[in-house]
Amino acid sequence: KQEVTQIPAALSVPEGENLVLNCSFTDSAIYNLQWFRQDPGKGLTSLLLIQSSQREQTSGRLNASLDKSSGRSTLYIAASQPGDSATYLCAVPLMDSNYQLIWGAGTKLIIKP
Amino acid sequence: NAGVTQTPKFQVLKTGQSMTLQCAQDMNHNSMYWYRQDPGMGLRLIYYSASEGTTDKGEVPNGYNVSRLNKREFSLRLESAAPSQTSVYFCASSPGAPIYYEQYFGPGTRLTVT
Picture 1 (spheres, chains in turn yellow, cyan):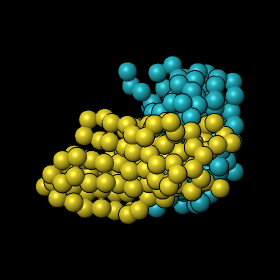
Picture 2 (cartoon, chains in turn green, purple):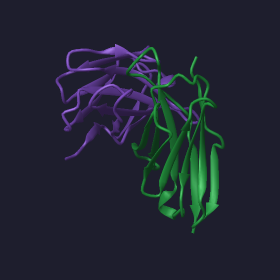
Picture 3 (cartoon, helix red, strand yellow):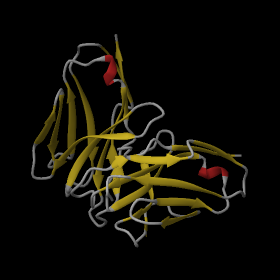
Picture 4 (tube, chains in turn brown, green):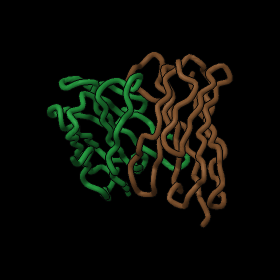
């Protein structure tokens, strides 16, 4: 059964630091891995979708990598800013259901000015 | 272009009451979803609609019903609310299946059942 884990549950870093958020999954047979951002009291926003054939995907200061063999994805945020403070969630589609995603519980990121 | 909209934003119900959560999208997406989010847990899929005219159960469908009213609208109904249904509910849409496409989320409905 696919399980998705995000450790740590919370992270606080000073502004300007580069940081890495982790996402682990138990079944390496995945279609893709998706990273989302959730601001307090709001819905989720898709950040990056990495297909299983890709090793990484970049959008601005964000870079997501995927290592299926080790069951890991990382989200790298360069030069962090207070506006990056949010909860970051990762998700993978369930293999036997094209429409269901399995979600991690998220990492709450606080960037201190 | 409003994206995905949900009503209401907040709701308090007494145990046994019923209510319908409304969701609409203006992106001409084929697929729509209802999730619940509980503290410390990831999102859990309640129901989804792969395309207009179809609905399917997700991970936690018990106690809920859905209607895909047309391509734009997908509603979630609680027939007899229970305290265990206290949660934040999110509607989402996508052009097609998540194995190919990202999902777009509404702002959520915070529901409390007393």
